[in-house]
Length: 289
Ligand code: PAF
Image (cartoon, rainbow, N blue to C red; front, side, top):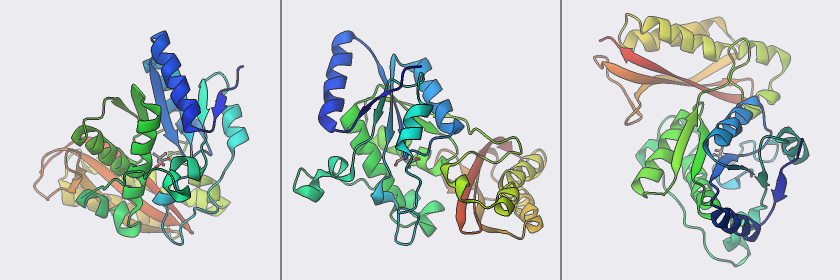
């Protein structure tokens, strides 16, 4: 199987973009931080269905990590990632930090993006500035790659909400495609950070999908408070798991819903298993007040 061509510079991506335009071909971009797993492969497969050519970006973005977070130990596995994309993506874009942020070396400034109030809730509470950094790199990527389609995973629900908001408010000329979460057999959402878990922690991490399942069951009859409570109660069985939040948000605003809310909701959960922070999410069709 053919391995993707690895591009390292903005100039190389621009040349590719020009060539594809000349050839009348469309381009799908899958932004990642590498350490690829089957969840990423699902995004790439969707890209292949929607465009003629797929480019996967691999860049561990320093702007979206806070002090004391896992930027230094985040897995960097470029060779394995490129091999995993053989026959699946035509190109990998793996820039270094100075290429993405040329202002660090006296080049043109990269416009910072601001997530606004939603960026300060949920993930933003324990990771201040995370979403500004994430949006800044995504906007920079879109500017470099100019994809027709960009593919993201549903697991990072707040990220998806904020990227969609940026695309809409800035009227960026691309289609956003969101792909459902891929799970292990026991329900754990695939994540590059799962590799940090010890055997014992890995067993306990199933608490997150179990909590979502309990919330979904309760939603067949209960209102927001009961659904929240059912999810949270599940975690009592998992002493290794420390809940950060479990809440129900209105998918159109990403605001916590009130107890008499009726309609579709997104359940979001974040918890620490040992030192590893995991996220998960589930969309529920409706709540009964
Ligand atoms: O979801 C991720 O892996 C990252 O937040 C993204 C979108 C690649 C930006 O760095």
